[in-house]
Image (cartoon, rainbow, N blue to C red; front, side, top):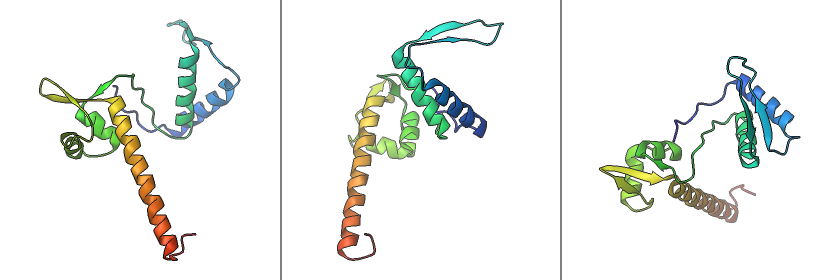
Length: 146
């Protein structure tokens, strides 16, 4: 997995937004050419790659960082911690408690990205359920949450 990208600049957000508007008429596949005469490139983007490009442009246009992670990618503990936005020691405690499956390559822990996203989905669902329960309790106690 490559490094997580930084947040886009305002200029990059505007470029992505303009590109997204222009490309929405295209359904893919799409032929692309380079404007650089020193490096003439002609390529065809298959439909799935074009769809991925559109998703990336939409994310950048809205100010989000984008990272491409291949299916089946194995992450280091630091990469996994960064993805979950937790400390590496906290991630390791989750691994050791069995909350996230991992395997070892030599002495190093590796986590499949698919396992990490599954854990994140479970964690997010538990957070939503807890928020719903707290809201219901506040409504029952008439604390102004209507």
